Length: 322
Image (cartoon, rainbow, N blue to C red; front, side, top):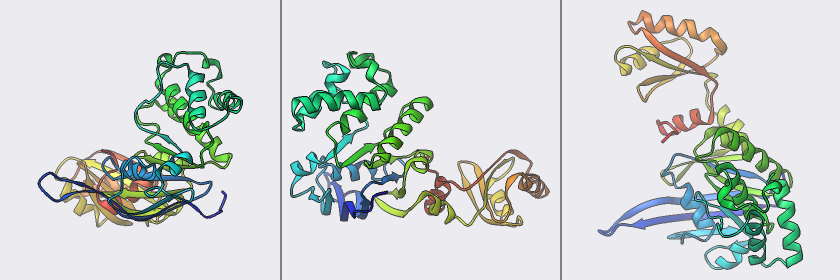
């Protein structure tokens, strides 16, 4: 990972959407953030956390209410056109030009960003190769599958060689195979030194791709570190989800007495127990016996290691899923 200093820097960055009757909704609240050159930086959080608004401000589409933001050394508020020249953006909606072929979508984008015709032709062909779309160069974009269209949008966003690539929920709505294909390509882009900021509510995506992850909720930054360090911050070795007959709140209270339990919490009708010093399957028969001894017949049980979702739940008391 290159370490030539931050390529994105925000200071007290804030966006308030005013209400007609006074007051307003604070979508992003005094955000301080630094993204280093060459890293994949993940913004993880549920829908409504402020991720898309943050990207909107960094890519000049949303005007901040207050605070400052710099991207690739350019003040996005003072010089939005200068900032736009240095970035690539993939939004959540399909913005491909349906009147152009797959190759032409890249070529005209590169020309729009000031590339000479010869360089734009070469870059378009080379980028289609990288994104496994060379065989579809002359196709109508309307014939592409969802996964291919998304790959083409990412290809178009980097054909002019931006310093920073912004991806807003890049795999939302994709099937698992298309998601993995896009992850692989993003990994290859990262290998070439491309700085990438992506927003996601998929914990596996943030975990798999990101050098560092910022966890957001209600416009606030709750935690920021490498995925490994964030998961290590959870004192539990094992997370057990228990579903049983009877009162779940009473079951959660009962399971606090389980040997090794360091926290219990009710989420969506299931009791989540963080267990320290016990991993693997050994915990399963013990926790079933303990629940049933308290008069709670277990109907379902799952055991996992701590994930980024565990971190999010510990920080907010709620699930990452919408």
